[in-house]
Length: 241
Image (tube, rainbow, N blue to C red; front, side, top):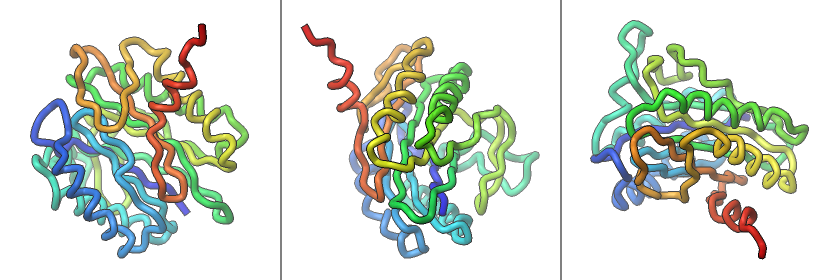
């Protein structure tokens, strides 16, 4: 089984996702279950970008991936990142962000998903995202971590190619053992926030930062349930007097 994750800008503006877009995406999520996904959800809403993730058997990965793109296309206020997808490398443009990771088959699937939004495609976001991948890879309880952001043309199974101009990355790690979720998630968040001009936001927060900055949202995707990790992280890091 795999975790498959797509991030895309399909909003009508450059700052936020409308309530109607979020509502319509959530309404159509069951279509992914009809295609064979074990669980699926709108996991992150970060500035004007959103993330759809699903747990899926390996042999259904391409079909469910196509279903996620169709769902985004059907509900898009603006085709945005969807226009960058191409069937060949040469014509690929700035497109959807993608991440995947393997899941241990005999456990409930749990994962951490971090999603980044830039206002002007700030290039240092690649280093920020990769720092969180590196942080996750250090834990024994992490079953798998997505591939590092490489700045190269990428082939997305069942969908096509996107170019190295694709920004606003999404990263994920699958976790064996629910009790390790907090340690892994908070380490990934800490790795992101240790980088320059990077700010943690709650689900649905507009990109209210001066250009030159990056915002990041963090979600625990636990057997189909989603938990916005910004709230417990804020509580955990509150300095006691």
